[in-house]
Image (cartoon, rainbow, N blue to C red; front, top):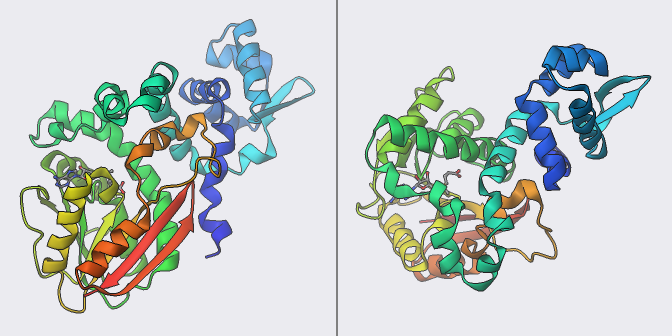
Length: 342
Ligand SMILES: C[S@@+](CC[C@H](N)C(=O)[O-])C[C@H]1O[C@@H](n2cnc3c(N)ncnc32)[C@H](O)[C@@H]1O
């Protein structure tokens, strides 16, 4: 696969740049306007207003914002998708998830950018973002906790669905059989890797509520018998031994420095001789190179959490890993892919 192919999903971001256009797109999705145009290809304003029960003037405003956002074009009194938006119709799951999450955390930017700029700690305490990703609600399996987790897991799952394509393009995992994905969330990462490397079977280790919701996700696909979930509190329990591949996708940046250091040491003790550790997560970037946009708010507001790969590389060297290989993969922002062998 070429970089062009695995980066193609990033084309959605051009339609999520500004809050006004992004909100109009989400509304169009929620009110059925996008689905309607997928079915009809083009439609008159009058028919749209009747079919979607919209006030003609209100519809006109919505269409106008969608036009200036590059989603729609009008010709002879009918409306259709622009050619550029047509190219991203296959990513509607991603567009919807990114927009929903960006809307949820938008106050963190619009109301609290001063706090963000002043103090990472204060921002973390006050932000909606950190409330959504509140892991204390993941310990007890209850319908309310599952519903809470399912909301943010839709977001992590859909990002993982597309990010993993880039990883698969950069690794050769044919020699591994028994893998564990720490903080493996919905199992989407494991599912995709098994599809690419069919000799693999994966244990997905995560907190109880996440395992419950993840199990439902994976079960909705055929032939996923090689993904199993194991509830595991990585802070309290050792990493189990017997695995020849241990992966941490978008996991370590979430942990304070000391916790991440300790976890890597535990992994070193647990992995089988000849086995491999694979870290794949966003690396700290220069904001000049990757300008902020509305649709990217949930990722960008975690700004303080991301790290430079040298931090992990140094720890792996200290712990005696061999063949430490660090690659950078350019996606929405740079991702680090670190592979190390025991
Ligand atoms: C940022 S998410 C990343 C999830 C997934 N790997 C991905 O790439 O989208 C971090 C994951 O770590 C899990 N997690 C957090 N604390 C944990 C703990 N103490 N033990 C096990 N898993 C934990 C969370 O439930 C979540 O699934």
